[in-house]
Amino acid sequence: MKLIIAIVQDEDSGRLLTGLMENGFGVTKLATTGGFLKAGNTTLMIGVEDDRVQEAIRSIESMCKSRKRLTTAQASAATVPGGGFTHFPVEVTVGGATLFVLSVDQFLKV
Image (tube, rainbow, N blue to C red; front, side, top):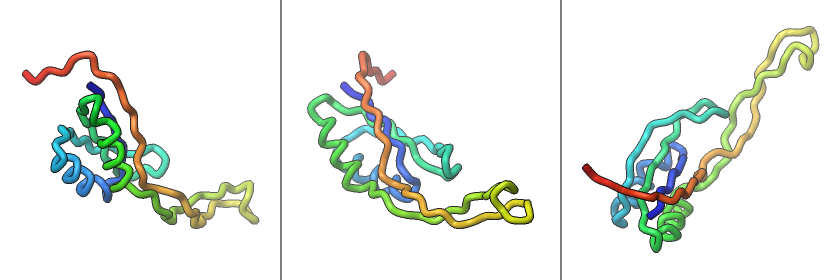
């Protein structure tokens, strides 16, 4: 058995959670916050039999697409004429999914 830990954007999580459960995957949802954009995301823990790991990964790939988003970056006094701070837009890629696939030695429901 494997445990897939999938970190996905909040806006992808509902559709992904529904799709995984409809395909018979056991899923636990955790609300988490990313460090880079400090934005909400969702971490899913998915228990998967070894022979269904690739099926679960394909489902995640099909529902979690990366996209571009504008955010603000701050320039320091050293780079701004006259000193002070300024904010300027920066395009970043968000979305997709970060997956960790771990072997599970034992799985119990008590």
